[in-house]
Length: 488
Image (cartoon, rainbow, N blue to C red; front, top):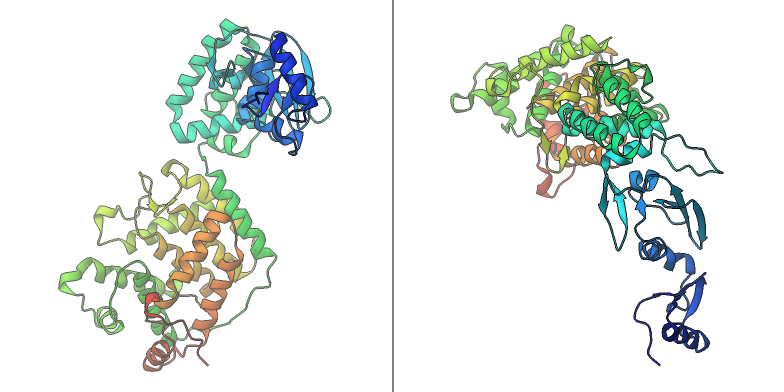
């Protein structure tokens, strides 16, 4: 007796094949899992087999069907869900682990592409039109996604591919709608696109990201999710209070090490003694003029009490402070466009930062959340991450982020935070984890530990501070096999 090679077997009108199926059913080599559908898998759950072979099944049962509406929009159907097809008839077919819902509609293949087997799938423009159709919810199932989802997809397209592509999509949809009878749906699509592009009223828009784009301040929605994760974690965490009164001597010394370590993290490597000569004796190294200027410029900002005690109180002031401080920081590097937001995308390893056209809007959204925090440590940790995550300039973003962080702490009379060289990898890893996974816990703990370390150093005496920093391995590199020791 010849066995079937495929795990899915369909009933047949061919007498020979029908007889073969009957024989193998009796022999226990096949089992029935749905009307006219059999399998050679004798133990596995029918729902798993049907889901795995879903497109083969619907191709056999409904040849020429179009995968459409929310199934096409979402790209697939989840196990146990409903798979929507446009077909020549209306019908629901419940199978183990999957419901097939046939929509009787425009069965023309215009606006579709060939899919698996005998199936077709709606093209991008047709998907949008289909999902703007009137749809009644039956139980918990609708054939269309929410209008907000269509709007979000259009805003994302505009953000990634530009306004010109959004206009081209509208032109293609207009032509398609006329040929398949979806003129009312096109009018809705046209209204949404016009609102996103700012040529129509934005009152029709449902999502915050689309409204922000229409108002000229589009933002990175994924970054906003990260900001909200950090915001929630900071509000739910008992945060430290480490007061520090910065006398003139303490200010001079702590500002020096703040500037020194902040530049070292970014690759401006000087021995502490070299850096001290550059800052305190105004002796820039002739062969490293730009690097010398970087550390002097950083020190000039972080040692200025008036400057450090000027936290932003509006999105406009926030943007102004960033540009002003960046202009000072990168003053010796004209090729980095000091004081001007980036015009090209920047990245660090696999992390791609906020697109240039989304910088101002993303900073504004971050500032909205920043203003809702009362605790100085929370505000400091939050604003540092916002600037670091947006990366609004070509260079100098890390130093600027740490300046903004310490501005909040100094203003509140609390101890600054700086990142010793040996602690650099802990700092970067927790930032990366927050960026990629939204896990804020390690980031908060890292800053807490860094501040505790700084609070234990005797900055009232420069020589004592240097000795304590050396004894704590602060100047060591992470690959030297040592770790940061907490001063006693």
